[in-house]
Image 1 (cartoon, rainbow, N blue to C red):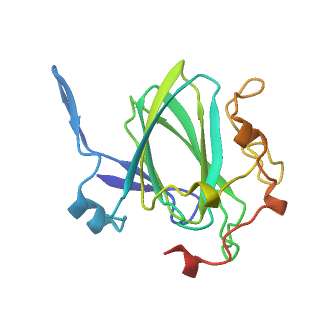
Image 2: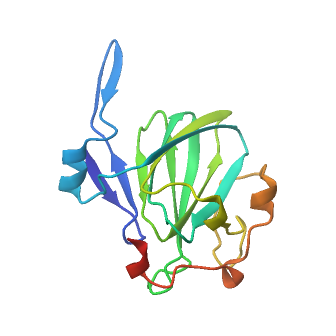
Length: 186
């Protein structure tokens, strides 16, 4: 397993070693000793799994209390996965990074607490699984507008995405509650 740095501090692409032959493939998506050696978290408390059709955009989500780190991967299809730095004391506050995650490339994205997260389904259908470092807390969940011009995410999208009501009501970054500092993140 190897880590591929991204332009955002602390956000990394995790590339597992894939063993393939005429039967198919095998990979370790999580190994506590390997994650510890790579400096990634080793304690995850919740696994989530979603399925969505092309053009569905989920996010940009985060929790103010019980901030979640997320290890995201596409089990089927392809997504464009995005992290935005919401740590007020970060020199990269408000900056974003996006990566293609797919069943073919088998890459994962590590998004630490202090970031919001979202993804767009670019294949006909995608199944996404992610591990979270803290429990989902609906009362603490917030959403940033997917198309906030101050962030300027370049979604690989023709037209408008399919959004939930919650995501349609996302706040602009300038009006959103964000993380005051990394000390509160864990």
